Image (cartoon, rainbow, N blue to C red; front, side):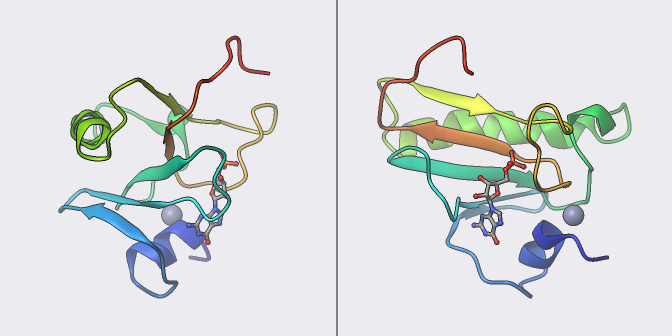
Amino acid sequence: MSCIFCKIVKGEIPCSKVYEDDLVLVFNDIDPQAPKHMLVIPKEHIGGAADINKGNSHVVARIFEVIADLSKSEGMLEGFRVVTNNGKDAGQSVDHLHFHLMGGRKFSWPAG
Ligand code: 5GP
Ligand code: ZN
């Protein structure tokens, strides 16, 4: 499997790791769009948000528990944004489910 995030999970490609447990890996985005910009990913390969189902949604629940913890431990006390892009129209560029966790600045809404 040539998935770049699976390779990061396996340690075949290095990352700036922020957090890891048995289900979830968090690392800094290589092209940050905010002072804090992490990618929160399941260790198992899930293609994107459209591939979440009853068999894997427990991992997504864990991801959001981790996001809540990181928002405090990483100092995003004034607010943060969580984004997942799914498919071509949304600009998904890596086909392994990931949640962008961004903080440290103000964000406009609606997003473009
Ligand atoms: P997407 O465009 O799919 O929503 O987000 C993919 C994200 O992965 C982008 O923000 C991009 O900067 C990040 N990214 C792509 N390749 C790598 C990599 O090898 N290492 C890290 N840390 N981030 C990556
Ligand atoms: Zn993958």
